[in-house]
Amino acid sequence: MLAGIGTLIVTALFTIPCRYTILTDTLSIRCGVVFMRVPLKQLKSIEMSGSWLSGPALSIRRGKVSTASRFYLVSPVDRE
Image (cartoon, rainbow, N blue to C red; front, side):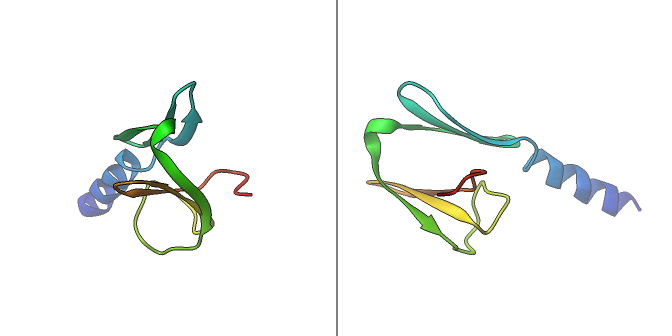
């Protein structure tokens, strides 16, 4: 029982809340304790993705946000 409760707590720490916010010059990505800021001028491309790779997204209907050095998988409410 303790292992189950511990697993639920760790899962909640890394998933709640899951939100994406576009600020004046930054894309803010928060998924639990994971928090990233991506400057908008560093964005190279944004495309739809169905990747199974891990990322701060709670759905498989994801968007792939790419910069010159890496990419971020996000799952906004309206993917299109």
